[in-house]
Length: 275
Image (tube, rainbow, N blue to C red; front, side, top):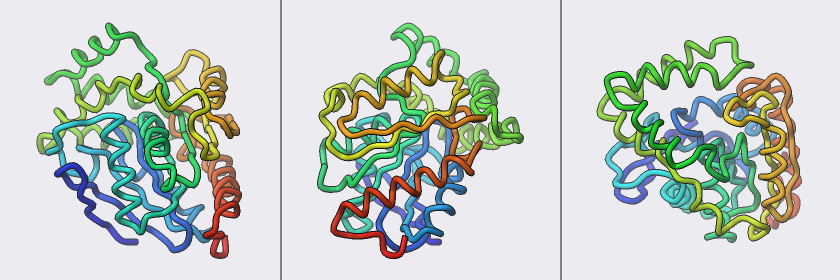
């Protein structure tokens, strides 16, 4: 394993790189850090892939000095990481908010995107403008960290230690001036991904949704809608999982993503390097 500091838009991204082979670049969702991909990375590295997991701006080990946050900014970061690690093409794995960023990155730089894995994807807003304003107010200090800690603990019904994980992630976000960056990220408006939907993305895509994802009233319906927006997509509903199926049910999610990655890279010049 190696930890790289990748420059993007004047800030630094913490990128954890494992293995060797075709490149897979993963990005977490709001409030998460790269540890959420630990089990999936282990599965993929063991199958002959090179896996890079980049912390979001203001999250994990990335700096919190960026001037912008959200889908467009994260798309630029994904492109920067792929270029830093040799230019791909790479399989882009985006969780939650980062799914929208992965779609934007694939649209802007199709030469860098061999395929997409979209986990619990937010490809449109889950709430109204008024709802987003209410969320922004709810995340103000001093009460904001407690609000987020409680909400985060409900996101992963399949994770036995969900409360502990929510507590640790929130503690880190509350330190070193990171909370302002987190609030800016949480205010993301996903309408910016709309120009890349309706079949405009040519890269093959796998949509992964937890059957109990609390971010959606009907997770299966949202997953079907997301898959329908992509020209060449397949869909995996993961049982006993909420918003992080790669952590909550790794035995189902890991092999499915591995097999999809194999299929993606078998269709490119790079091969699977033993995967």
